[in-house]
Length: 294
Image (tube, rainbow, N blue to C red):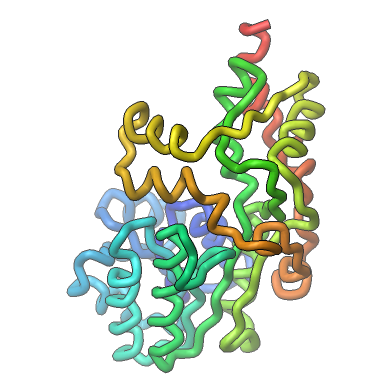
């Protein structure tokens, strides 16, 4: 087997995947958008090629000499089209396998556009004739890091997630599953829901964070439309992105978000990290500055 291509290697999952593949002895190539990005990876001994989903003419060089690829693009209304461009080049290059990062809840009738885009991109890959594996992770534990400043300053955080439970998964465990799917000869045509070992509500997550930092942390269930409007007006997000984030709770149908699977252990070969482990690893992040607001 020659090189394995990792797209969006600077992201949380992509970066963790590169580390895991290197640890397992694989030859890795990353696709980056700039020469400066390529130089940063090269400085660590990782082959990097400049390429861009938005410039299909760059993708042939990116895939040259590659047998397998990890496919993940940034959130974008054009995501299915952008990923489709790489898939088309991969078909021409006769790649052995593509492992795609999707999301739990990906389906064509989902009320959240993000999940409909994932479903469409999945269909493009399935229809390509290439061997593929799809991973649909549950919400990332790392998503809660964005509430660090609020927790540190006010000992509370707000999110439009209601009282639903979610089987939060650590991105490092998602990377382990992706590495196994890329390296091993099994997993053809499989779609894996990747989860943590338990399902928790945001209120329970707040309690766990509070225990780790020695303070009672409150979770406030915000109203989705108000949350969206604040993202647009207060943080300058585009309307489509704000919609995806604000209404994400409705993307998970009954039984979806809280589904606990054994994929991390069975496929990734590792014990899934519990939420309390993740919080203890990042306790300083959640507690930073807390003493200044007592």
